[in-house]
Image 1 (cartoon, rainbow, N blue to C red):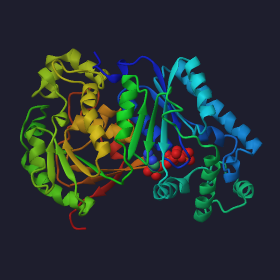
Image 2: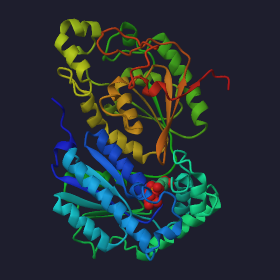
Image 3: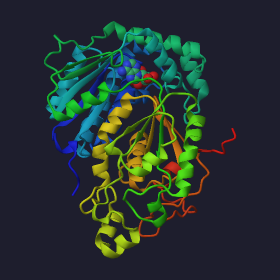
Image 4: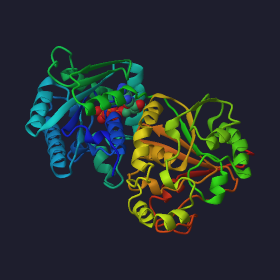
Length: 472
Ligand SMILES: Nc1ncnc2c1ncn2[C@@H]1O[C@H](COP(=O)(O)OP(=O)(O)OP(=O)(O)O)[C@@H](O)[C@H]1O
């Protein structure tokens, strides 16, 4: 049986309607909401109105966004209509639960019309405005994401450079042009912008983020799902940060092929613990960071030489194998053959007798993810299954694939979340360890490194690699 999840709490379809001027982080927030909800098994999808508009006008200059330009106004209205149509289709035909309409929804009149269309289709609207008047943040955002926006960058697949150049009559890669053009675009939007207002919009459910999360106004938050979204967006920040992930060093149980338990480290595991501070220093420099470990001995031993503040989290403990705790996979296959097969068939949902499933682990990790969103530089030393779940959140790995990802021992993984993706670097310690990877359909441990057909297993392996030799 799948565990309890927030997806079962509200049955109502919900549409988050983004509101705000360009370069206010709307798309970024929209994508993060979708990633967070999908990780919690809530079917979510974002519909970006700009992408629909690009179907008609791929490289517009600022004047395209002038409301007095009737020709382009028609195109913009059409793009919004197509995005809304697709969103409603998705709710009706793909069991959608939370859709995000990622446009600007500048005026009260436009929002009212979106509100009515959604209500007619039994979809609950939740407006989410990112309001920002801090010029430094706006300029940072333009430099961060708009210099590489498809609006300004030539799409190779269209390969008609001359046409685009003549349409825009500019050098599309000129940064100064992009900044000025984008600022002009914003000024056109400003002419009609009507921010959400506590009095005028008092009948609507809305969240208003002011200057990232300096101030937050919420209005008519009525359902559990809405309140989860409020809580999530409240915790987002835009400061640069890095997250390092490491499994504990090789344990005595790992050597014996046993799962679970609370064993200490093997001699090679202890060597990894000794090398870890150097590995981290090499990657983090002199940044201050906090180390999060589980309550199990092997993570405490692994982190013992790290010269940083440490926090223990029960939620970071390894997936509970219930009655199979302390057994080898071979023993499990002999003693519980049906369970062994059931787990291979659906590893995400399978719950060990008296223990946990991956889904259960995800649910207990939610506070960890929330806290990670709030924090800056964190190193997490934890266990294979837990690490897979955390990695899946940052890298948007689908549930059916995440339990099969390969995360080897004695390897430090560096995640750098950026505006539109996360950079991964894998740093090997060069200290041998057993493989604890179990392929589907066998009880033997070890990876077939020549087999490149298993997409999920290779997700982490394909990350950029850095071999650490301690001499750099
Ligand atoms: N709450 C926020 N307020 C201001 N900036 C933010 C916020 N959240 C994220 N950002 C920043 O916004 C940038 C991403 O901008 P994004 O493209 O998502 O803006 P947008 O509002 O969707 O713009 P457009 O309307 O042109 O599509 C990133 O640099 C990110 O750091």
